[in-house]
Length: 382
Image 1 (cartoon, one colour):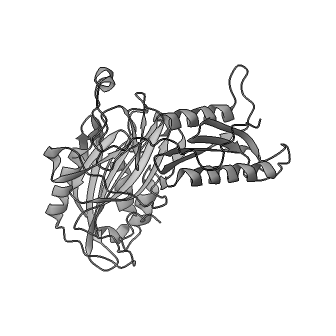
Image 2 (image 1 turned 180 degrees about the horizontal axis):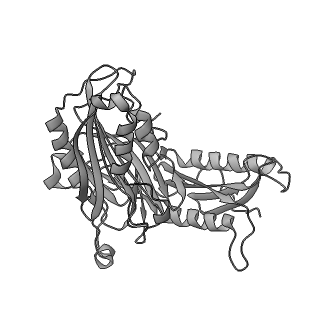
Image 3 (image 1 turned 90 degrees about the vertical axis):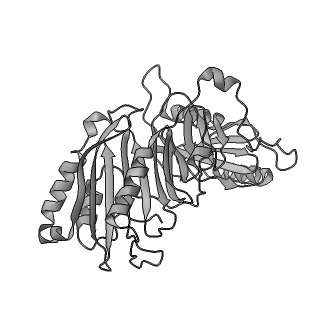
């Protein structure tokens, strides 16, 4: 499981801070690869591409957990898989869904689509009495890797002249899979689109995009950086960060004396106006750690999302033991400033230049589909 933020604090600040933050900080840890910049001028840093953003951290830092969602589709970690296994597993799942009846439909399977031999999209009931939500899954096989996206669709009747929620989600799934391609760890794409672990979805228009990543800082096993962004409608905004943090410290009473606020105030990062709160406090082993947060609520549009960036030190090790950070307050603040100032929207080339660009060096080209293996059914169920 992904680490829990602020677990190093010995008093209720951990619960209160987590409860007041507007981004969801939970999610499964996935086995991810480190991403290093392909720019020679950035040889002292590792650059991570997440969504349409970039952030720099000390060279050798590693991605340790992530969660990605594109156009309301959850993106699962890619898996190495042969084409024969891809076909066999997809055919088996479809067969099992067809074999089990639903209380209102002939089977659990509702729709099966095969846009091409390497792509499969399914919508189905999860179990025989399921009602209200339809499961939608999309799979694509590219050069030995399986990509898997999933979503849910409501069953409310469509408004006259519009498509059903199921068809709407199926359309989103097919479009995302069509524009999906592999991405090398070191590749920073030059075309517009959304970066995720081991892959990229090309698209000039911002969709409903969100992600959260944890980055373990090189040579500092107690330290990690978190980056979260998510769409947030203006009407859903909570109080600004500093208003919330002030209330948290007041509620701590005498425990607040253990917290030292190093810096707090408004801070602009690139075009994004936000607020930061930098504090240090003892962990459960009596050793001090850092909790640095910068946050902006965005402007309620797709390309101005809510953003949150954190630096935590003094985090527990894998065995749950408190760790002592090697970073002094001054060193932690210097690291924080360097990381935070590096956060930016990934620059992209003009459409004209993209038409004539060469593929990234070393990028594997999709292999031809093997002709052996289980036949791929093209039939559909309504």
